[in-house]
Image (spheres, rainbow, N blue to C red):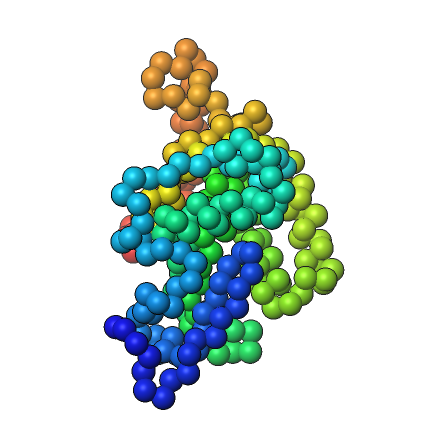
Length: 238
């Protein structure tokens, strides 16, 4: 669909280094597809280059500090990633959110650099964070995001969570390589001096005794004990 509906106001827009948001106007109809002219930052995926763009992001203590080997300030990282991602049609989002006051509101967003940065950060965490630390962080992040979204940046609970998150990032050091192509972001490589990935143990080939699968036999039996008891009582799995 193209053009503005009769009686509808133009979209409202808010822009900063991280994103551009669009609300109002035709977007108040959840069925309405935004016209291409609404987007100000990113090219459409259909018009993005036919060849992928590769980018490498370096992290120190969880913060992005360099792009393609060039040291940059946080603002510089965002500016560089915004340009690369926007040119490849990356970062468009159309969603209906639940407002703090109780209503549902539809908005469209352009977050090119942020989309790439999130994928890269998750990738470097995948090889540097302990399993349970990663799970705990994933459980807490929706709470942390909600605090910021609802305006509680200076609250004591946000500061408490921040201390935990900062501690989790001590060993998040390394580099991630990503491929940007027609609106998609794909992680194609990650390496870290503080990596917990041990190829000798994780291999599907001969591990020369680094991992003994027989060690799992007792664990498997104990973990399935409640299921075997239920089965013995004739309880079907539903």
